[in-house]
Length: 599
Image (cartoon, rainbow, N blue to C red):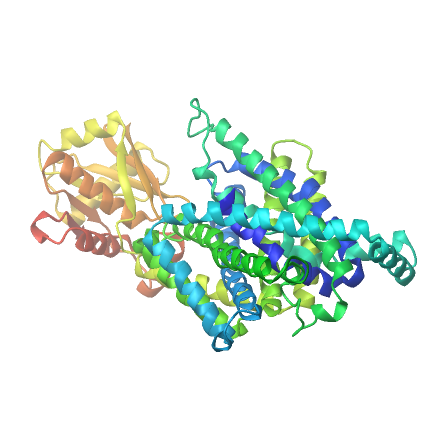
C-alpha cells in the first residue's frame, strides 16, 4: 500500500491548492464529489480489474485479450502512450512540487531558488534508488508514507479543531457559496461540472493493480486462481481509498476556510503547498519545516510508484510484440532512459506544477477510462450486469474530453509519446523481422515418429502451401519437387505446412502435429511468421536427429518488394530467402546450417 501510496497520498501536497484554483469556495463540495466517485466508481471498478488481472497486467492487457490481433495491439500502443504520459508526468510533477516546498521553506538558502535544477537533482536521486535495486525502493516507501500520513492527520485535525471552535469561517463560507451559486442544488451541480479539473485526486489505482505480484496471497493460491492475492489487493485498494478520501475532504475544508484566497494564486504563499502553509502558520516554523521535509520526501518518492508502473508495462508488452529489443526487459537500462525523459519534460515545463497538471490528468483519466471500458466489455461478454460500468465509462470519457479541451497540453504530450512508441516499435519490428522468433517447438507423438523415420535416410522436407489437404495435392507437390530438384524416385520426404496465425504476435511456441494423408507424412503448425516457423522447425529436426535437413521450395512469382512488405505486415511472402536469412542469423556455422533449395 505504501508503494502505491507514495503516488496516491502525495497528491495532498498539491491537490487542495489545485481544487481551490478550480472550484474556488466550492472546493469542499467539488472534493466531496471526487471522493464519492472514488468510493462508488473507481474503487469497485479496480476491484474487478484486480480480479481479471491478478498478476499485475492491469486494464491494458484485459483490453488486449478482449480485442485480439492488430486491433488490440494498436489500442495497447496508444494506451501505452497515455500511460507513459501519466507515469512520466507523475514523476516530474511530484518532483517539481517537492522542489517548490524546498524553495518556499523560510529556512531554505537563496542559492536553491532554481526550480529546474533542484527538480532534476531529485529526479536523478530517484533514478539512483532504482539503479540500486527494487527492494531498496520498497523499503524507503514504508517510512516515508507512514510519517507523512501521521503529520497530515495532525495538521488537518488541528485545523478542523480551529474551524469547530470558531464557526465563523464555516458560516461565512456557506453563506457566500450559497449566495454565489443560488442554493445547495446549484452548488452541487456546479461541483459536478468541475470534476474534470480535480481528476488528479484519482491517481494511484492503476499502480495499485501493477504492484499485485508483491501482494501476499494464501497458501492454496495457484497461478490460475490466486484468490488470496486478489482478496488482499482489494483490501489494499479499499484501505488506500478510504484513507485518502478522509484526508482529501478534510484538507479541502480547512484550506478553503482558513487560507486567504489571494494566497492560492501563483506566487502566493499557499501556491502548490496549501497544507504546508497552514502547518507553518498554526503549528510553528519547526513543525512546518518538519512537515515540509516529509512532504518533499513523499513528493520526491511519488515517482517510485510511477517508475514501477513503467517498469511493469514496457517489458510486458513491447518486447513481446517484437517492438523493442530484448534488453528492454532489463530494469536498469529502462531506468536510465526514463530518467533522461523526465529531465526533458522538466525542462520543457520549467518545473511548474500547475502547468503539468493537464498532462498528468489526461494520462490518469485515459487509463481509468480504459479500465472502465475493459470491465464493461468483460461484463457484457460474460452476460453480467454492465450498465453501471458503462455509465462510469461515459463519465471518464466526458471528463477526459473536457480536460483535453481545457488543457490541451496533456493530449499534446501524450501524442508525442504515442508517435514515439509507435514509430520506435515499427522500426524495431522491421529490424527484428528475421530473428528466429520461436521460443520452442512442441511436436506431438505422430510428428516425432515421422521425424524419427525420416532420419533413417537423408532428411528431405517439402514446403507446401496448404490447400485441400488430400492425396492428389501431395502427389502433385511431390512430382513437382522431384522434377525441379531431381529428387531420387524412391524418396519419401516430409511435407511441412505452416498456416498464418495471429500475425500481430511476434513470438510464440510452435506446436507441430503429424498427419498421415494416404501415406504422405505431413507436419502441420500455425505461426505468426511462416518463414521463421519453418527455420525453427528445421533447426529442431537437426537437433533431434543429428542430421542436416534439406528443405525444398518453389520460386515465388511476383515483385520481391511487394512480397517483402507482405511478410512484414502478414508474416508470409517470399518464404525461401527469408527462411534462409533466419537460419543464417541463428546458426553462424554454415556446415551445421539446414540447407535451403529453391527451384
